Amino acid sequence: MTWTHDTVFPFTAPLTTGIETTHDVYVGGEGPPIMILQELPGIGTETLELAQRLNASGFRVYLPHLFGTFGKTETAKNFARLFCVRREINMFLKGRESPISGWMRALTRDIRDREGSKGVGVIGMCLTGSFALTLMAEDAVLGGVASQPALPLLSGDKLHMSKHDIGEASSGMTAKGPALAMRYAEDKMSPQRLMHALENAFGGLVQTVEFPGKGHSLLTLHFHEPAYQKVDTYFKARLGMT
Figure 1 (cartoon, rainbow, N blue to C red):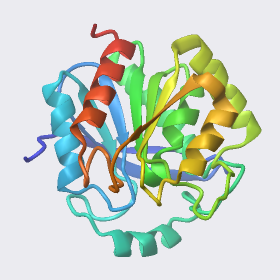
Figure 2: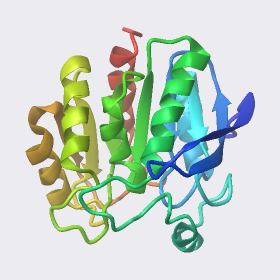
Figure 3: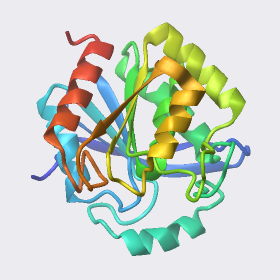
Figure 4: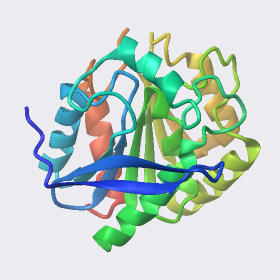
């Protein structure tokens, strides 16, 4: 598949540290907006196929390009690149979100205003998974899906969010409905203890789902049709398509 985007624009907003940063945002399709946050391997063919599936299902996709080469998956190189952008994304940060969360929050508001929509859905994957949950604190975000959330690395049972982040997101979920978090049952990069930590932090406000298998990337590299269908159904309900 080849994803056809109709526009790309640079978006500038402050990190939570107050320092401004700019990333390109690709946009394609028609319908209620969904923002896909890229995973560690990069924005490769499989991520673009996810965008095209969502377009075919009636969603407009916003795809921020945070790091790496657009159109390629380069896991090893992107690990190295993350050290270059560690002021924005910190893979080992416990009890606090990475500074890029401030930029992401601003982008969700911008998307809502651009589209004149009630709100936006967010999909986070791997190292961006947890952002899809905490972004539900934003009025602009109507639903969040954390696919194989993996941060912080080597975390034990710690989360990539603070008690304040959890409290604000919980309020958003209470008003708008639960978020969704999912993983392959035997995925070591997105460990079961992390799911348990999410359940303990959010209770029934985050619906956790495990699918059988040893893969990692449910929606891209190791595509799982039932997982995708669950996401599709979730957003159609949350964005008023059913």
